[in-house]
Length: 518
Image 1 (cartoon, one colour):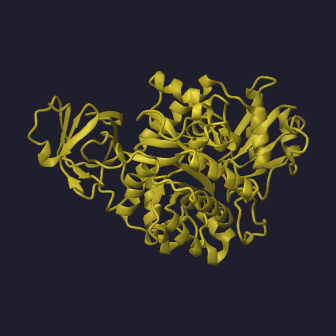
Image 2 (image 1 turned 90 degrees about the vertical axis):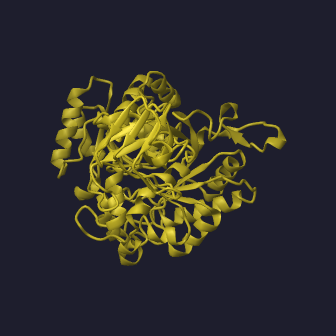
Image 3 (image 1 turned 45 degrees about the vertical axis):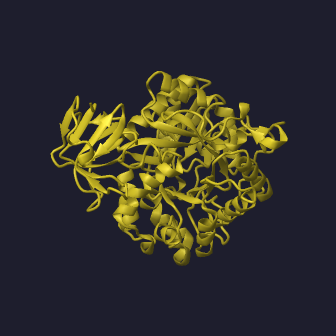
């Protein structure tokens, strides 16, 4: 007997062998079959959806849950239109914290302020406190003089602005967050994801550098799962910083590893290790994404996170040790470094490695063939251009604007295109991102790389079947087919006609976890 039989639905399965259906049978949290294979079977519960549309649960292949949840609970300057308003928010935040506590303020973006706030300006409202103004990109911050005084010798800043390694040094001072804080943050962010149809995600980095919140951050996810407070299925990317040289047996080909040699795939369908995360450059918002030609606004050419030889060594060692690699590369110069690293590493054959480049924000035409030849997936964030497309197009100039966060060119070259959000850097709703992939219009209505538009079916696939593949979940998620977990999204309209539809219900394992119940 089935546990659940869903009927009266218009199902887009994303399964090429059976692309549409009207009935879905569920037993013990997994899909038994669709249509005639299940419609005559007895069921403990039957639900008639009355013609509602159903798609696989969305998979966000690159998200920061802990950061999102912490940011949601912090004072924000995102709505501040000028420096005076920003400083007023900081003053209120300082007043709300006890003496000796750090004052974290989020939502900072210098672009609408005529330039960066300085430490001297923060000092006028900081009352001598440790003020940490966090840039939306995650790659920069501005701090008060009290923080500057604590930084190790040699950490450079510009009037209180720290980028990349400097921002990481500030995070080292600020941390660790407590496990209890992190569990709260993970749950808060996960429930927001559920409201937008996301049932599974790849947490895009724990354990080191810009993306660390605690040296025991993994324990927070494990605790959240134990307590029933982990709303999503999660693959944890771990920072390459956690890999260290090990004296494994020579035949094991493991030059460096996590403790005990754990690697991609360890865990269950609720929580498991995903890729190892390697940074090669910064971000476009902070003007630190590494480009081969300078930004059109005169702000330089960005910077690499480390020497290319060092990055290549990490990529190779992780590859031979059996890790999937997720290499952060936004600018085209950084993409060259990532592709060079993959090519060198793949001299050691490892079928099924499914390595990824995270962001692939600016990709030259000549780089597309290398993606395809190396079998590297492009994990993009279309909502970046919805939110920031006007600015990004301006700083790239007319020739390069069409190279931003590509869609059509990747698919035409045979590159797997994977959707994600990078929340909280910008809005996380997959339906909004899919709409941008189809219309390529920024939030102000301006086209950004119109030639990169793809079809609605391709956009939906990027957030379902292909995102599941990129996270190693293709046998469990991404399609509505026999044997898959019963993770579904019920929509109030046909997404292939318009992505301006709403999530009615989000379902995990056949159970409604957000929205209208059965």
